[in-house]
Image (tube, rainbow, N blue to C red; front, side):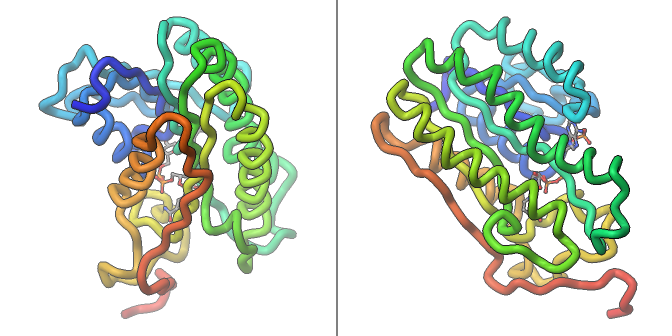
Length: 244
Ligand SMILES: NC(=O)c1ccc[n+]([C@@H]2O[C@H](COP(=O)([O-])OP(=O)(O)OC[C@H]3O[C@@H](n4cnc5c(N)ncnc54)[C@H](OP(=O)(O)O)[C@@H]3O)[C@@H](O)[C@H]2O)c1
């Protein structure tokens, strides 16, 4: 039970990568405060002590709610050991298809909310002299892709945010890292017109990304993994409208 007695805040916990991170942390004995818009039943992580799990419902694109719900949760946690930010979504298309509201929603959710949660959590961890902030970025934060201008802008923004923040926090003992996955087989693609190819090696699994997060958390004090980039072995995109 390597995380027994440790407390983590995890966003995007209702599905995909965030749910896999929550499962892994609970299995290893941690307490988890899980954030998402949907309510998460403790039974989703069956076999783990119910008292180790708390679900908070919050739309993180609504900054007033974020400040209220996440701020309150963080204040109630006496010893915050880590924050893993896994929430986000993608909308793709030509730039001219994006209204101001759609651009704003994507940047607010995928970038600004991450800055705001970090801003709430970092001072608490700085006071303790330790803690981990791990952010799920994307391969889209490393290389721009067709029809992903707004999504890539948010994810590139995260890369810069993490690079700067890790320097700012180093002296205080707080570690800041980013994980940049390629395509992962999750609900992310449910409302998109494309998805990874159907072969097992065309997409990462959410558990693969959670393992990368664990590798970062498990580094001995004083050592930091700044960034992990991971991809499916064969990157194949399937257009859902094309019959196979
Ligand atoms: N899947 C991929 O191929 C892939 C690749 C690279 C990077 N990523 C990144 O990985 C992260 C997780 O994605 P995933 O693949 O795990 O997708 P997912 O299964 O769709 O999970 C997304 C999570 O984000 C939460 N979320 C979305 N908007 C939110 C909001 N406004 N407020 C609060 N929570 C919100 C969702 O919860 P609710 O709906 O309950 O709010 C859900 O728990 C995202 O940042 C995504 O950009 C994904």
